[in-house]
Image (tube, rainbow, N blue to C red; front, side):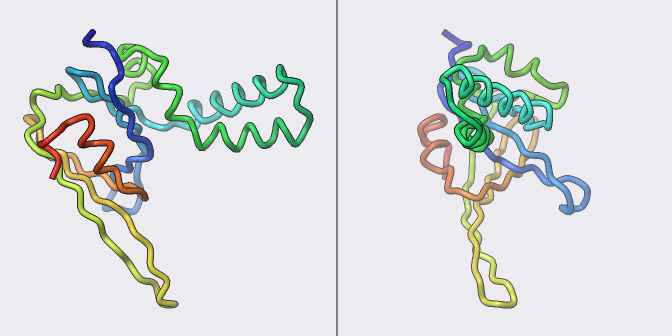
Length: 156
């Protein structure tokens, strides 16, 4: 089934405006298409509301509802597993898709930065080369395994 969700990679940031700002996307893959679903305030509000309502239905009190809201905001990407590819794409005008057949390579590089206090932080830079050009994304976790499960040996 070409509409089946085969992989989800959350928290992929795409720089805009000279790298000072970025948009965050969730990569949602089907056998034929990769959809980039923008994480919007409306989506996050909806996830938090649904988490709160579920906690309320389970009879949880104030702190239970509050905890559910926090967990829900961290697990927003899981909701795409139960959606169709068309529904994911239609969720926001900022969402876009590229055909998997057009993806020639995906490179993942780890970068470590140090601040003035010698505190280091890691980020992973993902470059997707496709027929429509290069798409550069950044994330705070190593997505290589997730991407290899979806795209196989195209991931380097």
